[in-house]
Image 1 (tube, helix red, strand yellow):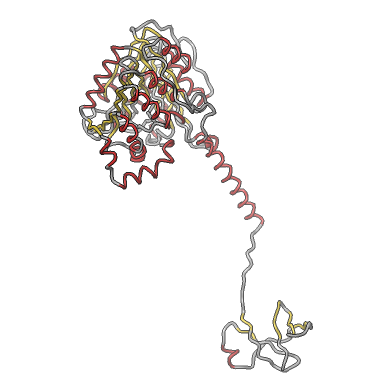
Image 2 (image 1 turned 180 degrees about the vertical axis):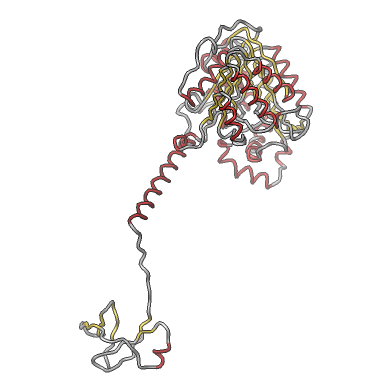
Length: 489
């Protein structure tokens, strides 16, 4: 029986022996060997021509050039750095509240005011005047009139600034004052200004308006890109201030007459508290420019303008992100009779929900007004609805606003404390955004705000615990899906 040869590399192995011989010829005399594809026939120098069939297997070897390997390594390192920096956006402040605040005193107690001033930052000032402005028909003319009447300085910070008729009108008023010699400083959040045409921004810069975009998309901002300024502040000549919920866009024009015109409020402020509003603007001006705005043109002496007690405090992830959270917890804990909340985005955390449940158990009447089908974020709507059951079961009243998107942000406690400004009743405002809220301690002002709240209730529908239990399965599913990311909404 002839020995068989097997090919390994360029050698032939004699089966049954350890003898290796080089292959001398390649060929095949058989018809089958000539016809079958992928068959190599070997000739044997010992036994004539032997028909040995070996399948041909081609295995390409992957070779990566040194240059390509360097590029792959660099891309991997870069992606890792980007992911690490971006992960910083989800790290909470070291100063984090973990327990509810006990009910030790009421809103009208002097100790409550003392602690609100000390723990939240600026002390409470006297001699202020605060006027409520309803919807765009009242808000925009008042703000534009103030801008056009400026003689020394204008400081303006906003989250939303979009192109359109309102955006154009504001930019023209700011440019006109800047060219007249007024120092005009503007901070626009980069995310909130994405719908602002670049040409409009360049036109303002060319018109001597000093415009800064807050944390634009850049490598040095990756660790903070999720932390936005949501403050809405206008301070003219250091004497007249505006704050509230309105953005600079056509959505806020009109009188909330249809779904294309939102419901909102803003507030005109005079008196010593305006200096605190100025300080809040300068806080972010320093962050964006590294420069301080000071002097008499920014901080003039402020005489009393009314008889209201008020203070404005701010919060940000970089310094005091829990201030807003603490304010709401302290206010709810001090409430004894009534708590009314305009909440355009109602996604409180467990501590706030627990504080509201404790207030209900004390006999406090809790009423919350939220947007209905015209809300601009379905994710927020689902995340909000998930927590209604606990509050409804405890006796809270939740009312759903019907005509249009309701964007008002206010809290009224015991007919005495009113908190208004940019802060939403949600975890993003408590932990991630730069916010500013104006607290007013005045019964007459609280009565006017309560009357406005009840007028809005007339255009809302109550939502019951039975309705919450009977909501369809797809709503429950959407609530479960968005629940883990509720703090980012």
